[in-house]
Length: 265
Image (cartoon, rainbow, N blue to C red; front, side, top):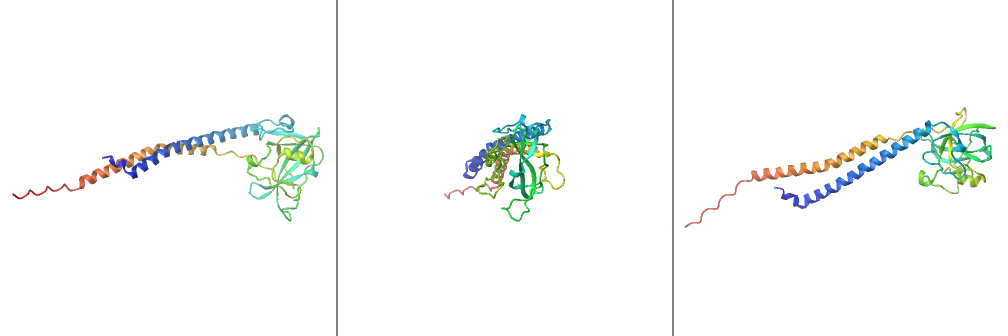
């Protein structure tokens, strides 16, 4: 009854089924890894955002690489903005996906070290992409600011190509080492996204808090792939039984062979 399983068609179908099962199981484990990764990231972000603000010098220093645990931690700093060496970061979007610039302003601390401050987003409404845009001025004099600590941007991490030969005072990536060479001063590792004081009047649009990644979606995909993996052998079995019944019924429906007439004597 089951000799049809040795036919070319059924051998191929069986081999495909055997290949699909481990593939779907691996995809389920990959989604499990993504779920755990995103859940851990959400937990780190929530912990960092909820932590008590600390002076920036307690978290970073020149040459320091901001870690995952330090990212988004709220820090404070007291000093003065150096608008003479301010630059803008090209091709950045706001919450409405409008393309513009981020304003990066050096912030000089009491000991002369520099903290890079991303003051927020402005529209690219200048006469051309080569002209330096009109940038709202920060508060003058000695001020205390607050912001979320961020690691240096790289092409590998952000996917943004670091284009060379840009117009004066325009950059693609925020990198403390590159800015230290440009400024000729000691620059604290990483930078901050300013969150306080709150913007008033004609000031850059501050960057919103990081959102949560949809970890439960990966969990649902994990379950889905493993259900598919379990469904493949069940589906194969159903097809085999259906084929076997069809062949059995076809065999019963065939008329019995008539006996050959006896030879004349």
